[in-house]
Amino acid sequence: MGACFCNSSDEFTVGFTQWQQLVLSIEEGEAWALLQAMNEAKRR
Image (tube, rainbow, N blue to C red):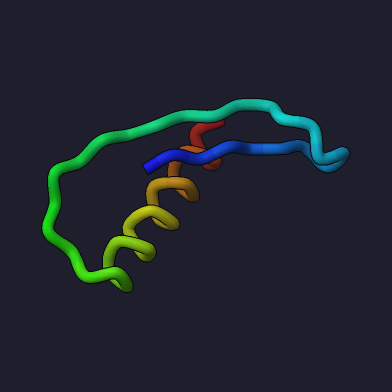
């Protein structure tokens, strides 16, 4: 999973990648990735 964060001017501020070995459906994977991105945004 990878994510990039931009500020209100659409300028890149930070990016990260994370590797997990999971067996998920597409829907579960998308939900997991969204949750991880939300948690990362909350930490910053």
